Length: 408
Image (cartoon, rainbow, N blue to C red; front, side, top):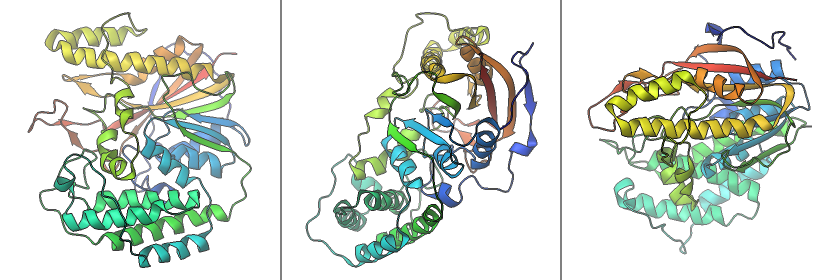
């Protein structure tokens, strides 16, 4: 475990660290390749800070755990772990990635699933289902869903639900290169069972590594909103490692759109979209503790008051999240928060500095911010910040790894 000597710094310290780019090493491999998910942590980044800033048996918290990269890394490094996310699909994926299964049982069950045919099945009802899926694909998916949902072993049922979820996206008419839900110009017809079989086999093989390990750590992953009081004891956490959304989902990473088709088919609750950071618009009720943010909000407001309110609403929620997270960290322990600095109206918002200012209100000292280049395999190279057709802007090229320590 690495111990940092300075508990105070005179000025905000950023350092470009090319060693954290992990060029040529995909973020999604092995256990982390089970089901794609937007803007995933790079597992080597998480592994580095877990090993440097915690010890075996320590408690790791990730309040924006997504598909469970931090959960996997905590588990295989024998750290206890608590992870929360508001997206039920993310929670399902994270649980599957961290749940050992019998490889033999899983392969036998897969064989039965592929052979079985059902006559009693239901097609889910949701708007534009025919727009996203061919008629015969809808029928095959509905049959497959009925078989999977009849599996009694919940661990194995979840395993095949995750394979089913990935299949849904691949056999749909959606553009698979986009995280946003966009119909492909030319969608190739795919055999549902063939796609499902290949995904399920890959996932079973990837999970087999867990059956060969002896775990001392406990992993707790659940659907929960970080804006509510987190259900763990105050000052119980040894390390927070997390990556919150970089901004509202409409103009940054479209978690809700990415998950939409799977959530509809799996019958999960999609109301989480109403509780994402910045989803509820707020008036300028009070000043947030960041002079830079206040300055940029005023500048955005002069050209577009609505966008200024959107940005303000996001940072109000982020501040509340920081407050809730801060309570849970033991004195002397660390927070590593990975953010991207988005652009609004041509202005780059320094979310890394803003986060450091927010945490300072709750007894934390900024140590250093390490800067790494983001691979375009994790984030699109362009997006449409205005949501106006044809208007494009470069997305974030760098991630900022903000390291903070709670005062004793």
